[in-house]
Length: 294
Image (cartoon, rainbow, N blue to C red; front, side, top):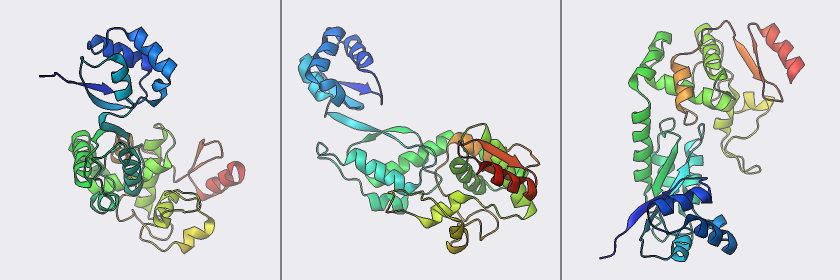
């Protein structure tokens, strides 16, 4: 009976490391010879990430060719701040390939059953025959494993329920450019909530506008006019308080920042054209920043 073993290639793993791993697991005899072969034949650029069912009885050539199309599972990375429609598109692109005869993912079903804010952004090995239900459950379980209740319950110090911490975290995820900014932006948004100022978060208007066909983007650019004309409960220019639900799927740093924000006197912030953030305590200071940096 032929023996098989599961061999895993991580996303972005160099061919030299793949060859070494094949050699150390005794699937090939010589890592250097394998590297030369895949380089000379052009196979190297077509090697996939994923996990592969390989036998030591296969030749080095057969193994090399297998690594270009024989993955059992596929690596999929969901960046922080993606919304569920973007996730669905990404899964479809990764799984719906000519070589995947087991494809059964339903994009529309995923969008319908996935819960925005709770599909944890991370890198996953997804089975080629995974259903929408399978993937939703996997992402939700990862959220529950990674987001400790102690983190979200800390939001109660700022009168935030656990679900409100996730809503706030989704805004921070879309607004912040660096980890250092996240807790400060969180503190500013909490200040605005406490003083009754509208949050005026551009990302909520982008979310409400939806898909921009012209630019193939779920996060369209917005205008001053959009602040008034986009009639939606998610538009935080027209509606005080938090939006009714998360606008994206936040990572752990944004969730922590939402639950334990930096205490600050700032009420305003903006990013200049280089992406640098500028804070202000008063509307006068903020207007001055607008004049100077935008």
